[in-house]
Amino acid sequence: MAERLIIVNGPKGGVGTTTGALNLAAQLSHLTGKRIALLEFARPFGQIL
Image (cartoon, rainbow, N blue to C red; front, side):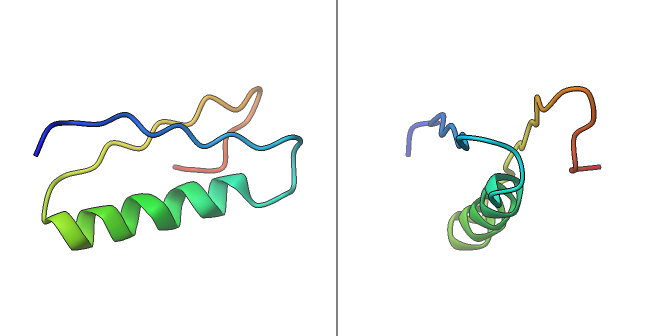
């Protein structure tokens, strides 16, 4: 399977975009058995550590 780039973007802060992206990454890792990179570019403070 080829590598893919999936972008998750929310219209404004506080709508659950980070939670959705984190759950998507976890499920993709579980289903594919591959390592998933999750990058958050929220400024000034991201929620994913």
